[in-house]
Image: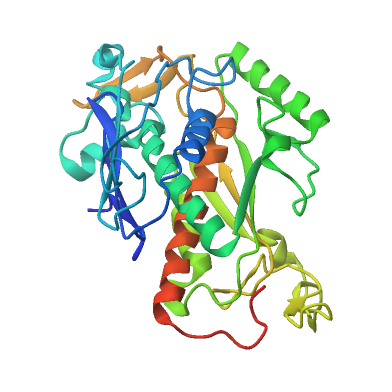
Length: 371
């Protein structure tokens, strides 16, 4: 029922924002891999709320409990389902009692009720970004497998907030540089302007959106599948499943629509150092025909402004009365800084799944195709 993601590396998440807890079951993780506690904890810390004025003040420790799938003494994956659990220690469902009979503008309240006939009113239930803690943990495991088995490196950063755009070298940017700013933008001048834009919106009871860019380096050629299993299509589905995501692009994305073929094509050449097939440009973003071509994978995700505003908004109630609502509680004025590890996680989950698919197919790529 749309709570699972992936084919061979399959993740199912569960739990609601203000319920007892949230978690994930990961099926298909290869056995014998050292469970990456440090990597998972680092990514969870980057996603966690309560990190300053740019995020929600909700205080959740996000301490991970592994219920199964990891050898208790040796710390190695067993090849069996890995169950992860996070308790909700700072849930305050009572903040939503007054909202139970109305539909918050641009939230999932009305649509969830239209779909299921009822909804978890507190915090939006599974529509809340609280659900993503499980994805980030699972994604960190996938990322560790990618690094160990294929040398893949994934880095995402905030590229735009409101009307502020950053200038970032996608080929050299590092996570350390990304995390040097609380807004997770490695361009210092743009980062300062982004923080000012978020502060200004919050002071007016408003919110702002923006764009996250992400690269995956050293993805070998040959990952993906034609037609419905395209790497590009599954990356798009993964990113658009994130809360507040509104648009996805691969490579030059929408800009490609304004280019000529002579501008957008990526000419091939042979790397004289190792004999691999390379492209002189990367307008395709590392994917051609739905299959990776060995170049850096480049993608971007646009996120809308947070729907919860601390100012009056018109809405309707369940019994079809028109009313005005003003939110209270704990909410992010901008999702972008905390969404960076979420984008990295979803990229890792897709790539890990396709890595395992490529390995299971046992098809050797053309000579020199990988690097």
